[in-house]
Length: 189
Length: 314
Image 1 (cartoon, helix red, strand yellow):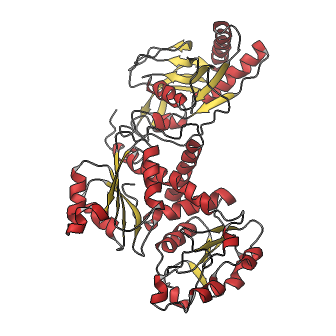
Image 2 (cartoon, chains in turn blue, purple):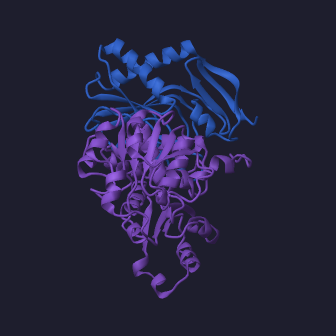
Image 3 (tube, one colour):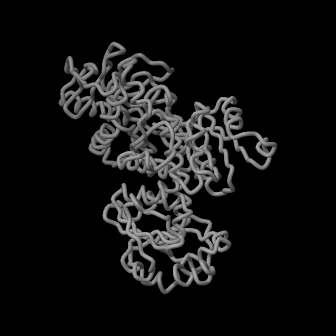
């Protein structure tokens, strides 16, 4: 979980306390490798495929997937970066911190865009991302890759590539970092 | 942050965080579609008791690019003409259910007075000689985008300081952000007392022009002639106008700024106004992004970080 998500998760100003380690860094590496293979397989190569990482947790993950895709197919994809803060539907309901860069240097029109995020939860970030993407053009299709699908969807959204399905309680917090994936909760300091 | 009334209410970190948020909106303005739905469903009213085109249009553009609904209250066609009081006007507008009021008034203190009569957030679009906070923010942003930071810069503000809300706001913002400000004006156009102003004063533009990073020229208002504060516009232009010769003596990286509308030939020569280092149109463009940042900060949720925290709702 990136710092921004942490700051936006109640109790605000609390501290993340890990209860269990779900994946270690080797597990992460293997899952990323598998997801890269699935992306290539599913799209019959990388023709017309573009990667966009969602700020903030999805960006390093998208870059790691791009590394693996390069090894597999010998093609280096440019990784786009998208901050969906201004497209969220919970502005006014919870803190929305808008401080990250958006940079999509390629044309998304008629492309297959793979959105990459670390954790799929309610699906609202992805809805906002689909809206934001619409401001850049009309992709031929949009796919979704996430490291952790933790359930509790509030919208009809499903991932195409999943690192791990992780049953959680609603009030738990999933932390994804290069060291691995931990499950825990925010505790008031 | 509930209202934006005065730069005096903000500290350095507030200012920097607004400028950082402005960066985001400048980036949004470069996208193929410049609108984002961040404030969809909110209503922003512009309530201008004093003439303004750029500030009002800039605020309205900012609100629209955030997806907010915009209502324009123009005094000329309103019940104010029939003698409606300021309080009744504000209470009536508030009864429509609005989220923010952008107000400009010829009297200092109006924005801070009307906040008692409404639950809407108040943004000061200029009040009397007092404050024009979004102008100071967009000026600071423009300077920061040229120099990376205001720290250690030397900025001259030239002209009618006494009657200028822009000067008062800019002095506060620039110095809070680490710049050194020198005011350049004839004694008649300086405030009676500069106590508490963190500035130096000069009456000689020629002595200052070679030492500064930013030359900020204020609009010379023609009414000041009537008050006989300067002998003639021509003499003012000769002593305090940015002539091509003075512009030549500016440092290589120095920029020329003006809040607009410019009196070409008075405070700035037409030739100097069109130089590549004159950034007046950049100021206007940054104005929209700065006002987006201010509206988003007040109506978006960052302010709720504090208000939600004690309750700890999940």
